[in-house]
Image 1 (cartoon, rainbow, N blue to C red):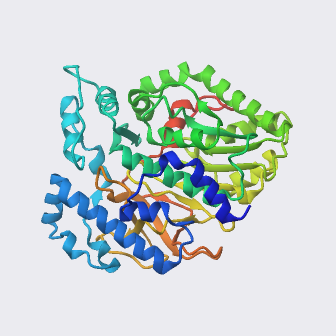
Image 2: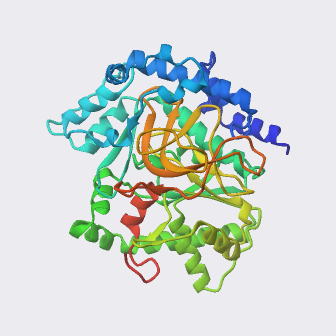
Length: 455
């Protein structure tokens, strides 16, 4: 199937995620491009400028706290006249989204950072927990999701339905574009979501997997149990409670790996199409078990792997990305150009993914504007390391103009021939920033004796 026809098939399946016309510049930048990693540069820049300016104006006019922040920085929408002015848009530190009070004051904080008019949110408890507040907002029609760092303090992001649909579509399009020509719509296509059940958690990297279940009908997940904020917090902060959680889950952990191994063997035996998406450490342990059994599968181009969220397998041990690809090729038989990594975060709706040829991270070029900043907040030159920041046009419910705690390098265009800007595949945390990542949350909770070794 030609790529154009392939993406037409994708959009037919994704119709429930495509907002109705008339489209704003944001929808134009998201839905119109055939491939937002390979849109002609002039066209991409024009779309991106219009989309980001539209979103900036929306937040300036409909979010009192952000408008005040912009006025303090002496910037208004009228100051953004061309793409060269985008760097003037005031950026929020990612820490801002974890600097909130508790109880009903947490609900007020969410209301204050939300852009636009909130739906009617009902909280019946006098002293609601963190999860109670999020549940109340989500019952009112929002999608409040979170991530966490090693402190156990959650990063909380409020998405309205419009933003959530855009975000899920962006994720799906990013992945499908790069795994072409994998025929995800076929009856013998199966997926394994290597995170928590998206319908039983509010963790962003788990919950966004709902779209995988829509695209591939035969979908399953590795962790099919409710994963709450408190469970994640206790697991991430360590100490006695963390050890208790891990001890309680020890038997379940072994079942998780055994179930994944059985799934892999069944897909291989039946010559099924198999897509694995999520935390790499789970596949790492499943491959260890297959290796111990002396079993090598032969999935070849019938399998794809898209990892994301962190590469730690134990507290002081990481899986080198290229070594993971090599092992997956040797043990599962999957060709290495169908083993990709994805970089994203709960605060944004941009999904940067490896190209199959060079395995560098490509940035969507039509709605997302990357910045790499030095310690003074000034843009650095191509190839220099700095703090990653971005302007994201897809969010209508919170200002997604953010400085992250990650260090990156902008690479420029890739030798694969795609026109989008790229990031060096090694992303690290800046000095003094706590470790974070949704896969790391799962690892902290689950990493107990999966291969005869504890954290």
